[in-house]
Image 1 (tube, rainbow, N blue to C red):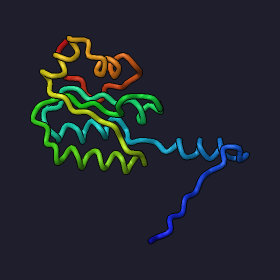
Image 2: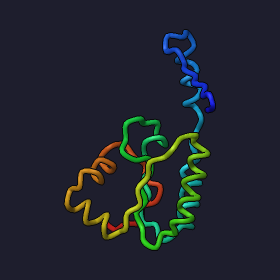
Image 3: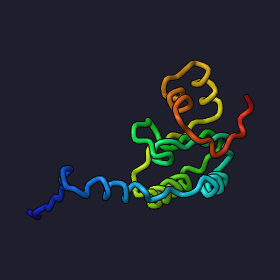
Image 4: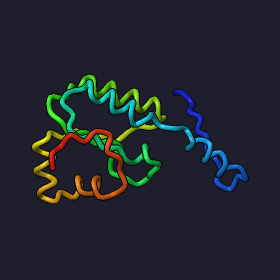
Length: 128
């Protein structure tokens, strides 16, 4: 049986906050880069980033993509690239346009939480 080493950082260490701030300064990819990459994945009508991309800890997702004919294999590669860039595992959701409109119209809590809390629209081609 292999021995497993576990390391922990003492929160009382005098330099803990400085180390945490240094780690959190790693910048996520630019919104323009995300927009370019998403536009190659299918007919994306709306892309919303929040969470990790805005420095928010308690959000339900980090990225929501609304569109049709999304290439899921390419989307998986896109997410892996973003995870590599951010150094974190991302939470994401993909919705079809009709499903998004339905859920928004029905005041779906999940969709409304994303849209009502701080977010950035990277792509917005949806008609009101």
